[in-house]
Amino acid sequence: MKTPEEHKKSIFWICVLALFIAALANAVRAGAAGAMKVALLDPIDAQHSGELIGTVLGNSFLGFALSLLVISPLLDRFGAKRVILFAAACYIVGPLLVLVAGGAGSSTVLLLNLAMVIWGFGWGATEASINPVIATLYSNDKTGKLNALHAWWPAGLIVGGLTSVAFFQWFDLPWQALVAICIVPGVVLAIWASRHSFPQTESKVAAVPFGEMMAEPFKRPGFWVFFAIMFLTASSELAPGAWVDVTLSQTVGMPGILVLVYVSAIMFIMRHFAGALDQRFSDMGLLLMCTLPASLGLYLLSIANSPVTALLAATVWAFGVCFMWPTMLAAVSRRYPKSGPWGIGLVGFAGALAIYYVLPQLGAIYDQAKLEKAGSEAAFAALEPGSPELQQVLAFAAAQSFQTIAIIPIALFFIFGAVRLVERSTKG
Image (cartoon, rainbow, N blue to C red; front, top):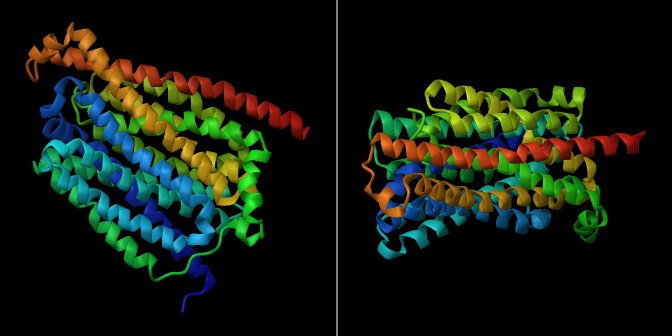
């Protein structure tokens, strides 16, 4: 029989595994994106395959957003355990449908998009459950524990990224095998979670009525400032992370997924220091400090043309974005505790919705830039694979896509600064 403290730790590590699987899946999707584009989408529409793969990848964020929005307010009615088991099922079904899509003929794009939505459902169900659970278990250290939990997001990206490199660079295995291995941890999560009971959320423990929880964000206009901020922070962190393999692999002389692995290693380490930094600078101060390195890092990624310059740019970017997502969740939970899982879910929904819109736009910017640099669709189609001319075209397209997104953290610098000033004057 486990002691309460041992049971608490078990729940924490089940939450870690669920988030780790979501990150692993994101890295695998990013790592396999280039191969999937070539194998499945280039034969359909080579001139617009960048936008197509961006849309496919973005649909995992759509699934994430939808399940997060639906599940968050109903978490206590469903129970965190059932939601985690639902997530595990999605982690199994999603990759299975991707594998089927390869032989679906004219339905390939449709089935790929459906698979990504379902795969994203698992991620959304995970975020909808684990964040309120951890905020409840560690109510006196929300920023520290949520960052410690979300340190395992980059850990999953590292494992998924290195696995992608091993499959494609070392062993020359098919992308289908890479996607298939994602099914295994989903099965492990289902078995492990089924053997434990999960706590009620903070709002439920405080006996906040369901109607009051649902109304809280609408009674507090300041909540929607954080909703808008999350839309922008997610665009600065997750959209470029999903885009690096498609773009940088062609321009820096190394697999783009390795850049994501390197960034994730920095994030894994840094997120364990978030609690101490939060106590020293406050959550708004910490977020404010992140913005300028995030913007500079994205700009440097846009002009990177070698492994050294890519890793230098990635270092700056990583220090900028490493605290953004979990600190935003903690900030909302701290300021609007009565909103419970609904409030946390809403800001997560904003982040997911941002990526759903941003990724296809990045793909469209990339496609437009490569055709502009080549001169026309016919001129682009005539470029020889691997030729210096094609490399120049793709480098220009990558630069345009990253420079566009680099503007967002600059806007966040002024927004976080304004929020911090307002809150300080209010407290004064």
